[in-house]
Length: 225
Image (cartoon, rainbow, N blue to C red; front, side, top):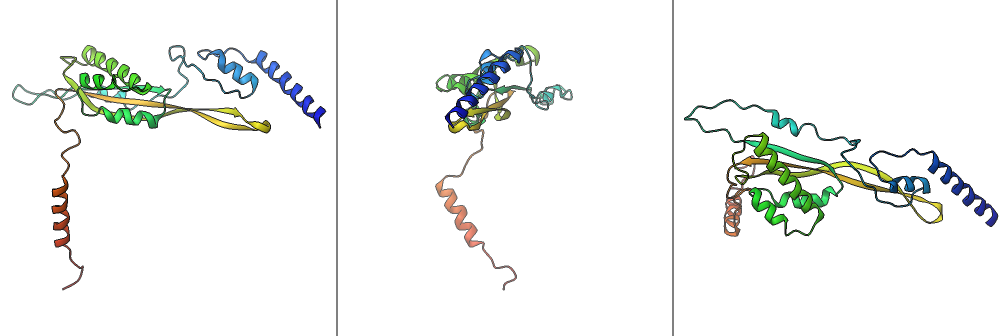
């Protein structure tokens, strides 16, 4: 039994070396992934360089909102509100963690959002700050926003991106699946001052009790006297 196990190990090592020599270098991916493939499931992190190639699918409908042309208005009519939709695709971050950060800055001005995120000790907060600065620059340069500070966060949300599956080595020559999650982050900038209450006014305790009592007093039995 022991000799059979040693022979199996030698065979696996030999196949691993042969596989390591036959795999061509993958463009845009660090060498840690090639070592992971050749050794058969050792847990290694990978580094993705988006400037070299883009193998992952990206959102298409969100940037198309910037192509909408509004009707011209007269001098006495209210002016159209300028908006700009920006995104960053396939961020190496959990979409569940990014949801808290994206919902935190909704309804804030651009300067207030960047200031508040600078105090959040999270990786996602630093990424969102970079995306906001990029969107602010593009909005002023290409979409006719007058002032860089006169805009607020109209929409901010994150969705699930590409999921890369790998293998993790376990005991007794077993393997398990490991998933590397990515997330898409979307933001829409609106020109002007932010609203006083983004989510709308919520009733307090006394108003809730009054509404509940009114609902009780208006109860009726269907088809009754």
